Length: 148
Image 1 (cartoon, rainbow, N blue to C red):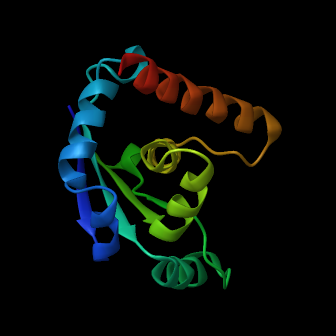
Image 2: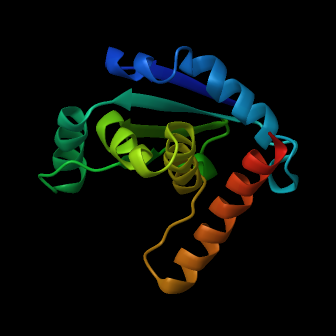
Image 3: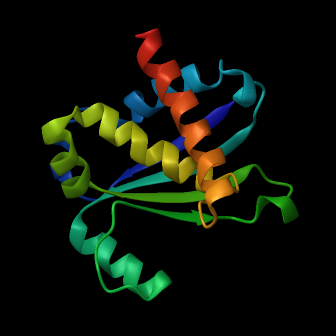
């Protein structure tokens, strides 16, 4: 079973997602039915925050003094017998801004899925890896939005 702990750092998220824990739980239940994710047992945290906190985290951990949409903090599970994968932080303002031309839930799903794949070990530092990660992101998003 895939489980996420959702930590709400700023109440502004409540304007768009009334119960983020329930929303994510439903998404993960759906994800667990998708072939590459069946029978996976792991856990991670989604930290829902704002641009100010994202800028601070980005500066502290990546030495980039600017805000960003999503940050991933993988817990090196290959050397750990526990199933905890790591943490993902997401900026409300960026998701909300992108949703003006799209849909808030779609943009939010894009962010946490992107972060989730990072904590699973995917990256996009080379074109080959970018394509592999994008393909996996699109697989999940297509599965979510063609199921509903």
